[in-house]
Length: 191
Image (cartoon, rainbow, N blue to C red):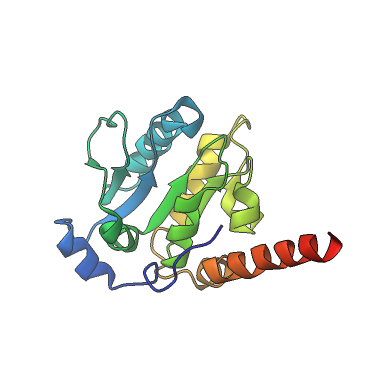
């Protein structure tokens, strides 16, 4: 899998927020997900409630189909047109993805390509994408909520995350195409 780096890239955070009608001075945690059980919206809500006890300038942006999350300072943006997704990622200070299962986790990679710090679970394919265990949490741990809160707060005021931006460059559609062609060439050669 890959990401289109010509579309998903760092953009001006203030302009992105103004375009989306958001407060340019607030802090935003973004979740792009359905409400399927394995996506762990229950954890999202617990983590956000705890962060709100610590900081009052933080909002949660929930994008994606499914039920809305309810609560103070939770903004449900619903399904966003593909052309606006890079703007949505760039409006966020942190991308949060506590899913238990992902076949790949494209939203994680898209957020990374926009230079947004990501905090995720350590399940399925996610650690392979993120490539940094300091950004992942075992959601089965007794203190998982606290770990997520601590990690999110660490990155909430950091700005563009060059480490995840660099890591995202390892996942491009060009690279995927080249590797696919090599597989076909090998099959034809061995045939």
